[in-house]
Image 1 (tube, rainbow, N blue to C red):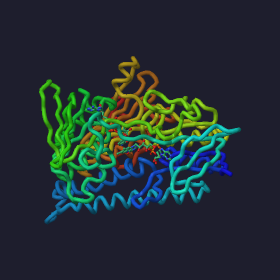
Image 2: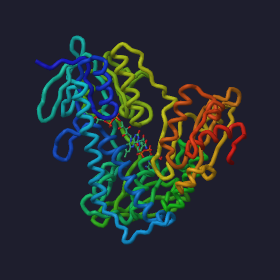
Image 3: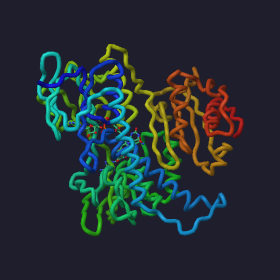
Image 4: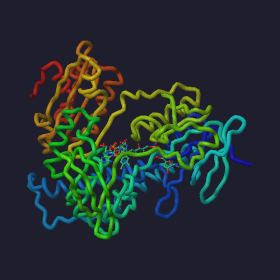
Length: 479
Ligand code: FAD
Ligand code: NAI
């Protein structure tokens, strides 16, 4: 007889494992199925984010930033070092250790919350009275029955036609996070296709460790989703660091051999060019994971991108089947997946789960960090919204000067009439942390005046947020 559950979650990334935990907290009997394997073939819950995404990329960004600081900035503090060396193998091993801590943490949380975990591939078998039969195919294959199903199968890197990932020379995010694992060396020349989030973060890691990095971007504009002023400041900073970014290119044939990779492309002027590199990262977006789910067996509706079609409450075309995270519409971000997961679990339990899609922050963990929430200035212009703007440079912030990290600014956009905050854009030190204040303020529909009247600790980077709020009505105190 098959094991029966109130809820079966397929996938244990940030969408899946959070949905499983929240549903269990609400008193439901929950199973979570995930197929990810660690190097020993055992379970490695956490999905893309934990295994080959958010967590390992931030571990490498941290290690490489330490190296960059030691190599180029310690001197300013009077610290001198002899024979500075980078042990890439050790850096990768540390990153793997951080990943494992997170995998183990999730297994512990499943136990703590009494979520039954199944290691294997989950797929639909058929609809049954009051639910669905789900097959688990793994070391131990079995069939489960669930009254409600949450699909959280995530996404995978998109390949360029004619240049499949071999993870040796042509790398997805997976291979990009393992460069140097066996050789112990950073590549001398690294090519990246796509100057999106992965391109910039991974390009930064390897540039800091000595690689000559060239990023080829198809669009003529840089970081089109960000506020234009921020994108301009970011481009200036990356140029200064020596990250070579070519915009408006058309990538042609890619050849991979023993000596590395050759990329033929046309530059923005229409001239034929060739890029020769040791390794090539292809980061041109991601595709939803729906193959292998056997969606057709139950008639689950898929969209053109292979995504699962859902409404704004994450309900699919089938009763009792929900989908969250990268496998559905919307930004492919871990915290967006988590918010949807909590809301779905609460809806299943009869509560009123809620996600405010307008207030999902974006963060790019480069140096300077880039973070924003809400509307960009160009969006407000396009939508004909009357707004006021105010910004404050980190150069005028005492804490930033003490840190020796004064690139960038905080920018507030507020409604011209009501003063409600419509968008906050930050480029500079700890933008990833500073943006949380803006999220809270906007969730409570605060005005820029509200932030301007709140006492912020001195000296702190957050004073720049207060000053940017003051700047909306042209009354900064320190600039
Ligand atoms: P996933 O994390 O992809 O998890 C899906 C899980 O389902 C996987 O474990 C997969 O093996 C499993 N699965 C798939 N099909 C089946 C099946 N049939 N049966 C069983 N299991 C199955 N986002 C951020 O917010 N911040 C960041 O800093 C960030 N950095 C990133 C860096 C990189 C390099 C990459 C690639 C992504 C990054 N992201 C980041 C995006 C983030 O990783 C994703 O948005 C997030 O992982 C989506 O969560 P998810 O649960 O929807 O899917
Ligand atoms: P992306 O969508 O961020 O960027 C892809 C870039 O590639 C775009 O600029 C696009 O114009 C370009 N491109 C597409 N096709 C091209 C082609 N043929 N030739 C040249 N350029 C081309 O995608 P990316 O970087 O792969 O990341 C995937 C997703 O992972 C992100 O969108 C984000 O959701 C998530 N992520 C989030 C991070 C974070 O939150 N800090 C970090 C890394 C990834």
